[in-house]
Amino acid sequence: MAASGPRGPYAKGAERREQILRTALEVFTEGGYHGSSVKEIARRVGVTESTLFHYFGSKQAMLAAVLAARDERTAALLDHGDPLPGLLEVARRNAQTPDLVRLYATTAAEATEPGHAAHEWVRDRYAQVCADIADRLADRAGPGTDPAWVARILVAVMDGLQIQWLLDDRVDMADDLERLAALLVGDK
Image 1 (cartoon, rainbow, N blue to C red):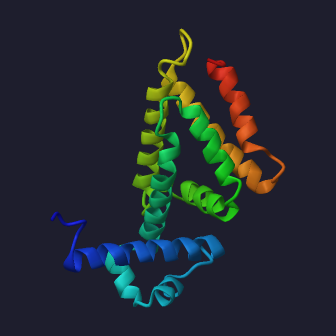
Image 2 (tube, rainbow, N blue to C red; image 1 turned 120 degrees about the horizontal axis):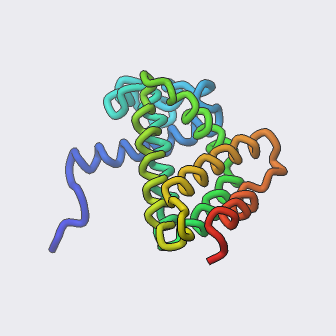
């Protein structure tokens, strides 16, 4: 009979890490990054702050891990040929989680500072998301259209729409993104 997963201390460590990530997501979503404390996350998990730092070297690194886990959950939406329906679904889902969108937008802006713990993660995330979208747009984009450029513009617009929506929830992120995509790549 094959083992179903890791056993022993490694499995417990992986489970603890997931518990910390879930709790950190709750705390960061409730209070934002700056309004949240490592002490509160540790209290809710039932561990010491030094235990949290054992798993994540800093509060910023914990935030980056929380956002990476969020991306893993939403990656399935983009896991098909045409990326546009997935992007639209992500925009619709984001409209249901304003605190998480705010957390992401703030972190992405702060991570432009090279010393920020999430700097590399945000930079690499943008590169990967744009590359994935460009690859999937290659057969949809018309002649003379650069799929990498279209992907970069769609991602930039999506981030910008999130900020506008955070400031005015009447902004329909999915509708605006869909209309722009139709202009950029047509209705194929």
